[in-house]
Image 1 (cartoon, rainbow, N blue to C red):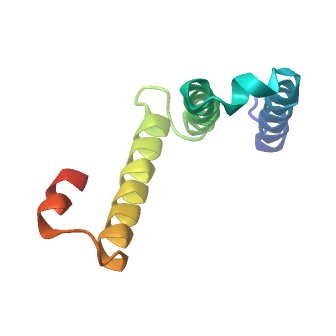
Image 2: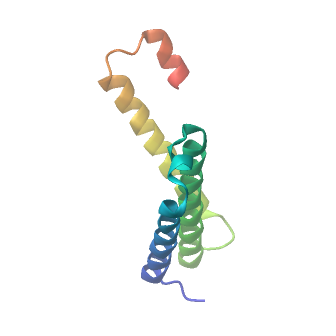
Image 3: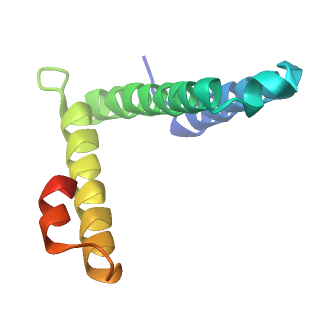
Length: 106
């Protein structure tokens, strides 16, 4: 099975467009409620994350080996570095955070 990155990225964009097309069809008053809007946003983010993890894992399995989950390792390391970068950015740039609160952020 040959893995085509351009084709998979087009599929991912098509899935995203279909999901975004559903949003205006939902009742506007339902989407204005923070009780439902937050979980819906989390669901969209989780769906995009799961699809990207799946396609990156397929790409790594084809390039390297399927005996070790290199794709999952790559996604997890990238996520750790990203979270560390933004945590450091927030702790250094925002001067109004008390010293005691920094422990809670980490």
